[in-house]
Image (cartoon, rainbow, N blue to C red; front, side, top):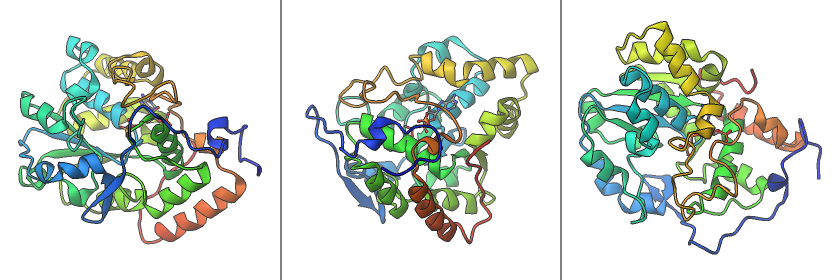
Length: 313
Ligand code: PPS
């Protein structure tokens, strides 16, 4: 075993033995217009494409594990003017349905939830820009894109793959790094995703937000999101939102910590959904060699873009 970059690495990451579950069949990835997506999502993608957005829908778009659930909680609290009874009692996935999600008859599809939802709606998606239904652009919807540095996303995604027992097996940690770098994971290449949304941010009403910035200065970022959405909130309400959406609060909150999902979808005994919520956790998992390999590919893939990430604070 080679030397790691920081504190001792987590034993699950080190095990080299893919976790297997006998309870449910893990899904394979299929392809929509060249983007690998879970086969369940591909199966209903013709319907997803035809989704009719409304002008007051707000779309929260992210590559997986970039802070989607966090932003949903922030935006919903802003739109409701504070921490209302709805926010305290309705699960996140019902307040912001996951557009392309197919619950395979265990839980509702995103499309069904959205159909039944009164306006103004909050919509979650992990789709790359080019796969987002056209109606969002025709209706001029506001979009908040949250981006997080690739190394922390990779670690978070690895643990999520293990506990989301519908996603394909990760293989070893080394295998998963290679799958991630080649874009052979659900929702495709992180590089294409973050740069694809970055390149169009000024063509549409898109606010591009960084996970690292929210963690560093949540008051400033909540105010920025509120301003973008056309809401003016007093300081006390913003402080209340920041407190409600802090990692420890969301980790203990059954409306946000995914404990509501059946274990046939998310098995929290394998890894919690609200895992660490940090910037720089990657140092606990990357070996020196893995980091060099990653950096080399990163430099190559990010050479042409002005998009920059922070991997520590
Ligand atoms: S998903 O499944 O793709 O929708 O997951 P997503 O919500 O995008 O990302 C989950 C990661 O975000 C972390 N998280 C937070 N970090 C800081 N503060 C708050 N409030 C917060 N809420 C969620 C969560 O812990 C996952 O990151 P990791 O690194 O695994 O802890």
